[in-house]
Image 1 (cartoon, rainbow, N blue to C red):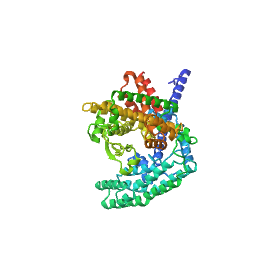
Image 2 (image 1 turned 30 degrees about the horizontal axis):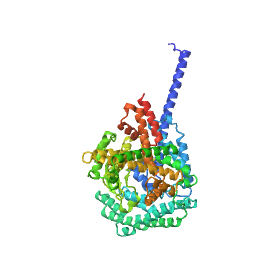
Image 3 (image 1 turned 90 degrees about the vertical axis):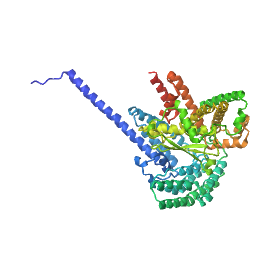
Image 4 (image 1 turned 180 degrees about the vertical axis):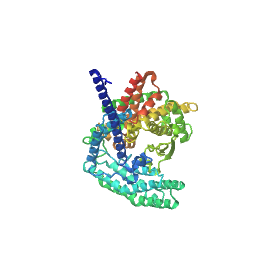
Length: 611
């Protein structure tokens, strides 16, 4: 039988198909190879970042062994003189490795992870290029006051956790020595803190490590540790003799290792006093304005120019002030209600407040995904008396990413009282604020690479902006709860909300004035006096806080305003498709992130809706 011959055209077609097959094979291989390489890169980055601090790791992961991390081998980071150049080098290396990936060959989830990481690392690299501007010992949110809280809440669920906890206590002197080396270098370069800030820290050292309380066995780091040991005994994970041994070892470390480290820190700070500038903003240092611009971007996630941010804040301030004046004109008694103390609110427990908030938010906020796996619980605790002067009015303790069921909210009784203030605070920290957003995001991102990433990259403007948005919206819930029994409270609650917005907006503007425009205390005092604030002690406290905590108020209020801007844009672009729940779903499904990225996603969502 004669073999059939291919015609030239058939040969060309066969060769073309063969080439197409090879190209398709190479494309598929390249796509999946790029995907696997990127996922490996993300995993290595995630583990590397967490392994740099055993406390951070313990709070982030409930079971670090699942990620191949030996928690007991980790040590607290100790600053050294090469750290500045090492940090820049590592950031440059990571960015260089990241940009080698072809983002177009990645899955949509990994493309988003790529965008987030690239944006974040670029902002972090810009900030890190300014040496000695960082202040780890800030009186309000620095290491000295934060460490005891983290130790008191350190999760202890096994014998290994006990051993790791005690190991961390033994490392405190070395950790503090690294911090003081950094402060001595700052001092030598004319970048040390003001005397007023140093005095606050020196006082903290004495108060937080109360030697009399330790002698009496009443220090909160003893009491909280012993409580956690008792739970292990109840669970038969350790016996009574082991518990007594660990209690004794904890006391020994606190009295002979940790407390002396705080004493030494106080001595060193005393010696360095006088080597810094008077209390002043970043603009008074060489490169300060540039650093502030970079730090504002990293901290708030807003990429607007400073002048545009100023205009945004000024417009909001004027708008809310006009509304408050008009409201006071209609209801002259408002001032008496607000100045007389805690604003009245229907009597209910903190737990009942959270339950009410959860129920009332359902119409406008999406349900937490996979909530049938078990609702998140929340324990409300009070800040220890010795920590009250140094902590926020309230704060939410973020649970591990692999177990978000157990949540804790701390209330500072010194600054947060009952009534409306407590209700809106629980909205900020709980529902629909931090707790809800955290658990929602983690459940939504289960199995995605962005989940790991968004839990180690801190988007302060998104996190706090959302919580502020939730807090201010909760005033409507408060009005609804009170309208039947106390209808007159509607305008009182509205006035309190406007007053809160005006205050936060004003402090945000002062932040820019102090750190970017170079306003000193006299200028700030004169401005506040001109608009009716005459309490000199209060003005001094506000000024010093803003000097010590640059961008903190902006993190909250600019973050909130950015969400409002996105909301307005969504209403305009989505038209009839817009609902409060659809907008909140968009924000929650795509965060935490910076606002430039969220705006780009919003534009894409609009194109998809319009076909």
